[in-house]
Amino acid sequence: VQLQASGGGLVQAGGSLRLSCAASGLAFSRYAMTWFRQAPGKEREFVASIDWSGGRTFYAKSVKGRFTISRDNVKNTRHLQMNSLKSVDTAVYYCAAIPGTPIASTLWDSSKYDYWGQGTQVTVSS
Image 1 (cartoon, one colour):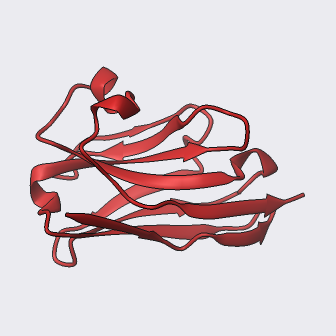
Image 2 (spheres, one colour; image 1 turned 45 degrees about the horizontal axis):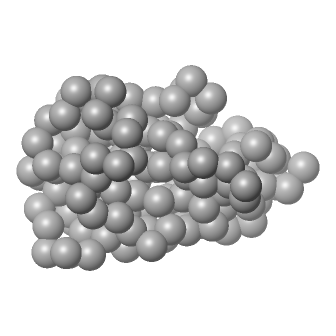
């Protein structure tokens, strides 16, 4: 099983980036997928999650209204569209997968996840 995160980069404040997480050896249609991020010196934090059907999405308060998580089951890929980026969004972004349809409190807990991508760096310059 491999999760491949991509799409990070350097962007000015107010700009946009689209992250992607492609899965191999794992059918995303059976998993919820979540984006976490970790800034230097800080703990890993929940960003956004989407269930296997795409019917439920969850967002951290800090990104709600600016970020959108979506799915492409044909390509077995999940995306995170990030708009109106701020310097505080600078972090390494990780995608992670967990089977089934966990409750929200489980989705927010990074220790519950079975599979992780390698991370992609997002840097927002002010």
